[in-house]
Amino acid sequence: MKYRIITAAVVAILSCPISPSAGAKTPSAGSEAGVNRGIVELETTRSAGISVRIAEDLANVIDDGATRRVLPVVGKGALENLTDLKLLRGIDMAILQTDVLDYARQQNLFPGIDSWAAYIAKLYNEEFHLLARQDIKTVPDLANQRVNVDLREAGTAITAARLFDLLKIPVTATYDDHDAALEKLRKGEVAAIAFVTGKPAPIFRSLNGNDGLHFLPIPLNPAVTAAYVPTRLAADYPGLVANDQPVDTVAVGAILLAANLQQGSDRYRNLANFVEAFFTGFQSLLEPGHHPKWREVNITAELPGWRRFPPAEQWLQRNVQVASAPNMQDLRAIFSRFIDERQQASGGPPLTQQQKDELFGQFELWQKGQLR
Image (tube, rainbow, N blue to C red; front, top):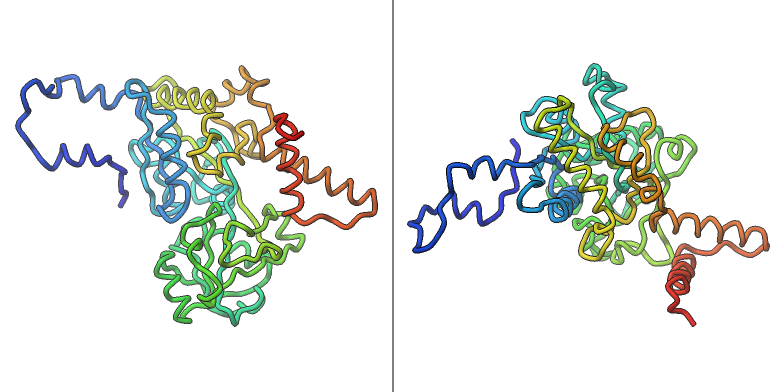
C-alpha cells in the first residue's frame, strides 16, 4: 500500500462538507484540470529515511501554484519503488540507491532495464550505519549473529547483504522496521541493526553512550572501497561518537530516476518542465532551511553505465558553464586533498578531520573578505 502525502487543508475539504459562506468561491467545472495541471509524482523511501524530506524540499521549490506541482508518494521499499516506477500508474520519478539499480540489473529482475531506466540526476550519498550492542566490538564479532537489515527488498537489506558478503562475514538477517529493531537491540534480541540513510539520521540522534549501544566501524578493505565510498560518522551523532574518534563507514549514492514515459505525452512534458525548474532553481536548495544533504549534490555528475533522461541531458548541454561550477562539497574535497599533500610534502603529521574543517572555515571567511 502507498500513502500519499496530502495537506491538512485537502483532508479537511474532503472529510468535512460545509455550506459555502457568503462570497466564498465554489470549485468550477474546470477545477479538476487545474489541480492536475503540471503534476509529477515522486516516490520516496519510507519516512525513517531522508528522501521524504528531500521530496518536500523539491515540492517547496518547484510548485508554482499554477503550472507545476510535485506530489510526494511514500513507498515501501527500494525494489518495490522500482516496480512502481515501471508499472504503477502515475509514478513519474523515484529516489533510489545506486547499488539497488545495479542489483536489479545484475539479477535481471527487470528485463531490459537499460532500455527504459534513465536518471535525472545523481543526488547525495547515504551512509551505512551499523549500530550494535556494547559487547559487539567489531564487525567480525557479528559472524552468525542476528542483524536487522530493515524490511525485505529495502535498500538497506540489499546494501547490507552485499557489504557482509564483501567482508566475508555470515550473518542471520532479520527484517523488522527500524523502530521495532531498535527496541529488539536494546533487549538483546539482535546483535546489531543496519540502516542506510543520509546522516544525521533522526532515529540515532537521541541515543547516547548510556544506552549501551555504539556504531561499529566498517573495515575498509580493497573490495569494500571498490564498491562503496569511504566516509565517517562523527559530529553528526554527539551522543554516540566522540569528536576525536570518528567511526569509519561507507556510503552509497542516491539518484533521481525517471519513469519510461512516451515522448510527447502530457506526463513527459510535465517531467521535462520539472527538470527545467529543478535544475534552474537548484542553487536555492543550498540555502538554509533545506536539508544539508543538498550541499553534496552535483547535478552534472554522471552515473556510469546508465543513460540520463533526455530533457535533463539537454538542459546540461545548454547550461554547461553554470552547471559545471563546483559545489561546496567538491571544493571541500579539493581543499582536504591539498592539505593532505601539503602536510606530506613538508613532513608534518596528518591533520585530523576537525583541524581540516576549521581551516576550511577560515578559508571560507577569507574568500568572503571577512577575515582580516
